[in-house]
Length: 158
Image 1: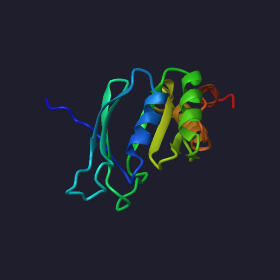
Image 2: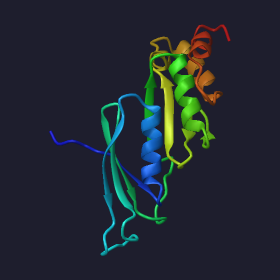
Image 3: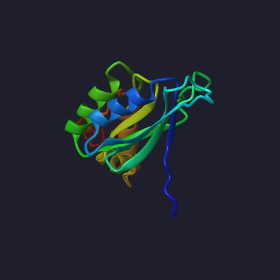
């Protein structure tokens, strides 16, 4: 099967963004940088693309200019093992960015992320519809997700 590599369009901050993301996620690195030549369309010698890996997942950042910007129509999901990981990634990715709701945020480059604890899906898909609805209602009222609060809500203790 061919490899699928998400390409992220930046104005001019692709290398800066790749370095930032690599500083946050373990086992991450920049693997290649290409530059505009005399043919353009960017200024010769400036960064065109940056290939990088975030904990095993390949990405490419392209400095394509201001023509296109990120929207919430696409986001990157970070599945966190526990609340400590949620807190860590939330703190790092909202630095210079914007908190949204229900575990969603925009980072300093405008890219949307979802930072979610792995136990949340089980609560939202609980076979008891009352438990799942209580958990859903609690999640909809949160900005950063709190697994203990979601659990308490599902259990009817919130």
